[in-house]
Image (cartoon, rainbow, N blue to C red):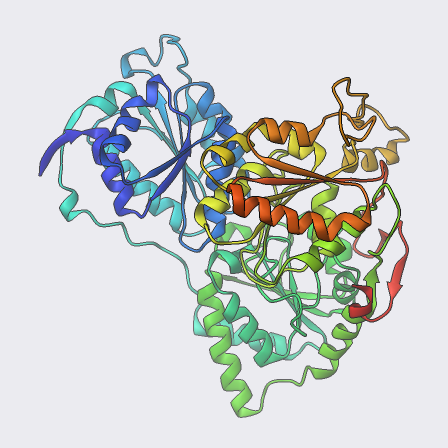
Length: 587
């Protein structure tokens, strides 16, 4: 046993739980915790410019690699409230991050002290657990519990609030005997999987819907193996994209109202049975339940018991971690294959593959200002199979999901349910901090980029290079498109004549993103013509290598492009022409 401050014990526990990097902003009420990190020198700290940015950096860090847990740190009052959006984004997508906040001394908590707010109560709806630690000895125990809670069952975020006097108090603590608590994850039984396989055997046109739970469980190889053994095509959700390579013959495309493929929707509509694993039947994937479920039976496998039946009642539900379930599914499927009792799915798989090869969207446009579809065509051509894409909400995200290619798990880093603007930039910095050697391409519309644009300075200061593609139409494009249904185009234009515009800045497009990025210590390139794409990407890579800072490539788009979407999976409006030609020709 050793006598130490509670915050010194806290940092020792963080080390034992695997934390090597944190993102945050110091302040008076959290300075003791920072002093403990400073004394130890074992946890790298990335200084954010906004505490919301720090929370999204922590998200990116967690999402980047299996086992990661992002740490974000802030002082009392507004630092905690600034983190709420990050906590909401994390819990919505089952992402574990740990937020640690400072707090006024215990005696001042109910006296309207400066920056004293009940952040645990505010954070409770968007965390798995939120607590203000009132006893110094409980500080290391609370952090131990936090990791147990974050990792057990459906993963998610935790907030720990530390009053100033609790941080400074001395306790007796023995780190030498410390051990992380065992993690609980429910697992399917053999009987459940055998029942599910018997039900699947009755289907003529089955599909597997693979959700983000497959990624979280690091079970993508098991998913692909199960698909290959059974011959059943896979529809990944937006959060499950990359769980099976895009060019795998059994990858049947994404289904949905917006972030979907034509062939994915058509295949879902043709199916008669769906096995969902680690997914939550999100409304952007399903559209109306009536259309999505009509003529189909369902099995749902999910780690959270209350998720099964939440959106609609499946024909059979299994509570299980996706990895544990898939391991059993593979085992039973292999036994059935050896016994000759697996149905032949080759004709159905061939039908799905034919749709994939023919039902394409057009991407090759040569016009100026640029069509966004051409930008994504050029990204596919310029970047390899191991590229990691980072993006959030908006037409930029929707078109990225429709047109990019993803070949590996965690190469599509996206906040699926919450969709906060501004998320992309700090999340990309978190991914870079976690993966120093990875090629990272972030994708933003101009409004998403402007929301937390100050975080570019973080990338410059801490040498976190990545490529940030900004597709600039000077519009809130998705909202403008949604307003069409109300016969208006109101307060969604970002265009103005910038009196400071100089050089090759596009007249009337408002903010000079190149000038802002360079003013924040980064490098930036503006592209206006299709003839400039290849040179711009090569130059961007060279600038990143030379300066080790984020590099922004801004593409000047036509002001108005209506992106493929609809209100039902059987009623997606394509707006632009489509190509019923072989996929390779379309690309």
